[in-house]
Length: 181
Image (cartoon, rainbow, N blue to C red):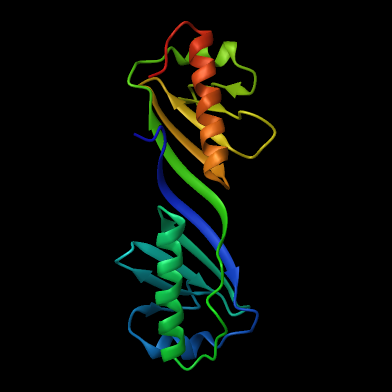
């Protein structure tokens, strides 16, 4: 059983061309576009459950995939829709993962005040947020450790980054005398 569970990946890629968003938006009812509200076209897939933000610069942000394979499948579906809209597109781009959000559970209640006091890179201010905000190293990964033993890890670009953050949380739990499961 995996120690962490990926909830969402955010990836980006470029089409390397400027886009006529109005033309894209009117090509299919699944494209949402209201430039008075948001400057990009929104496209949502039900399977896999992934959303796209498409900008006139050709930049695309993809959110919601749980695996890189889901992200690739979703991009292929987007590519097909854009070709049907009349865009002449090269090969399907490889997504660049820029953020992974995952959860984990330690299956025990944590004394987060003690946890925060023993671990370098941990901050706990209960008046502002009900969890320890833990930065396991110089990377941009952040683990939110709740007293219930639930953990949210965000900012990772790779599964290795996720696992490293989880390992550091486990090390912190061991420092306060608990055994992480």
